[in-house]
Image 1: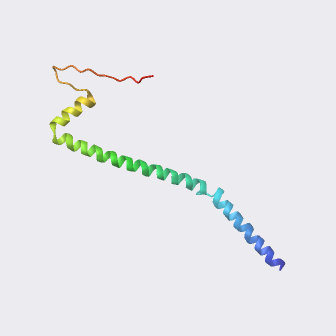
Image 2: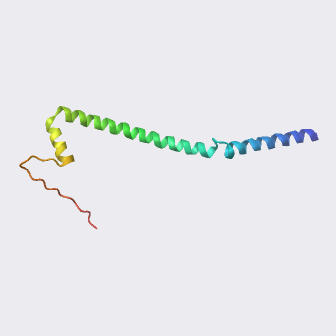
Image 3: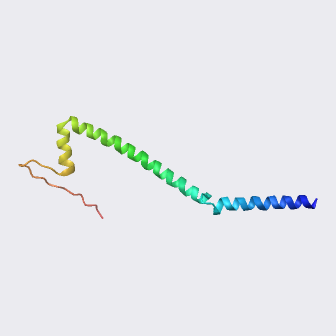
Length: 97
């Protein structure tokens, strides 16, 4: 009976050491894996954001290529371009305090 208890105790100690090794000491421990999963989720969100931006910009590019009026409007709004005989007034709304 005494040998059985020693074997059981030995098994418990080995299992405990293995668990400690896997949780804290190993290169891919639990904390490292949680950190990697968090980074993966962040990168997936960024990937979806950039896919939406690419789709939006592709639609804008298609519109600008097919319609010269929209190209002129875009250049005037985005780059403040003007014709030679025009004046541009920029109105900036100041936030109220």
